[in-house]
Image (cartoon, one colour):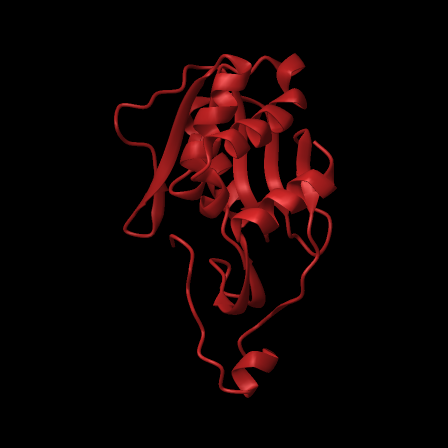
Amino acid sequence: MKEEELLEILNTTGAIQAGHFLLSSGLHSEQYIQLARVFQYPKYTARIANALAENFRLERPAIVIGIALGGIILAYETARAVGARAMFAERENGKLVLKRGFEIKNRERVLIVEDVLTTGNSILELKELIKEYNPMIVGIGAVVDRNPGEFKIRNKYHFLLKYKLPTYTPEECPLCKKEIPVVKPGSR
């Protein structure tokens, strides 16, 4: 999938939103990408998951895992595309946990997926959570990479769209200075 195709899907579904947003990282932004708006359409979701899966097929993941809520549908559809199991981590008292009987076997091949990556902290937190199972992490995939720098991680990493957008600390945020109300759209 070309970046232009994905941008067209994001625009068609209204996934790119304008306003004053509080991101899960604590940073502020004037745009938010709500992939749930895309994931309500199975035809788009399948295209995106298949495009992401193409980059990891040769790694033969046995599990594709994401983080609730944004990563549930993406993990499921990507797992379908590569013939793997799908699972998700969720927050309990602010901390990521694996529940619902999800298990990862020793050295099982795991692909981590993220809908929108901004700082990479959620990915690092998920890696820390599953470390106790001693998995073989075969890659990390994101639909949209908003990271202002390069995401530094030792695993294979692939994204479908690089979307540069300024983020601000609350103290530096020009929208806060204009007293525009902030909205917290994420699941955290």
